[in-house]
Amino acid sequence: MMAAMRVSGAPMLAILMTLLQFGHCSYLRNYEDISKFYSDNARIQTLYTTMGTTECKYDKVSKTNSREAEFTRYFLTGPSLDLVGKFVNHRHLFQPAELDTMDVQKKKGGYYSSERLLHSFYGDTCGIFSVTRNWGGRGNDYELRVKKGNDAHGKCYHKFISDTKKAGVFGKIKHCKPKQ
Image 1 (cartoon, rainbow, N blue to C red):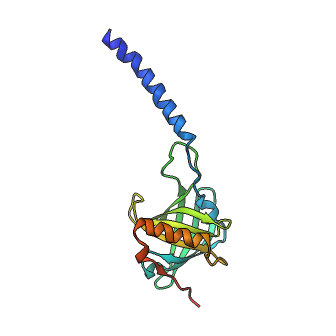
Image 2 (tube, one colour):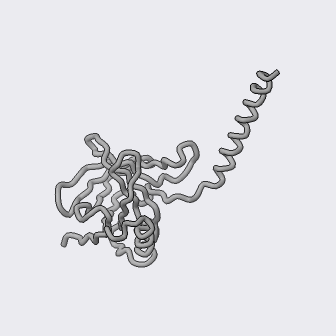
Image 3 (cartoon, rainbow, N blue to C red):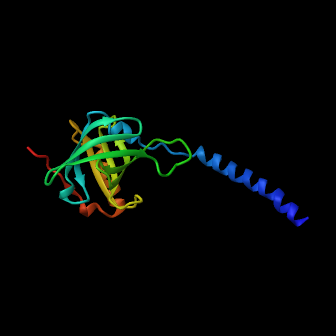
């Protein structure tokens, strides 16, 4: 009798878990779509970073598709890197959601970074990124990046300041001055 109750309880538990899962799906928030930011031929410059001035850079996107972007990262000091960013959303592996993160690897192999587009403004021309070099995506560094021609004033800049203050890294912000 007890075994029969356990067996009949298993399908009920499965149904309950399924309902909870589908009920949670309707609560998916709208994520930014990093594939729209890292689009074909985009030139993306870091204007502010909490990672230090060695991370002042711009990315020149050479090729994209729905799953990844190939780009060269040029630093203001130091050699450039050929990179591939694979578009993902680690928080929703089993449900459709915008791809808000790039897992970046060196083109010749090897993990480089995880870069999540937190907020995007002005038609995907100004964005606030959470960046980590730690495998697994945990970090507390932020960057404000713009596509060529955007100066990052207004909402984008103010949201960057707000996010870095909330994260406790406001004092680490460095302004990246472009090469002349």
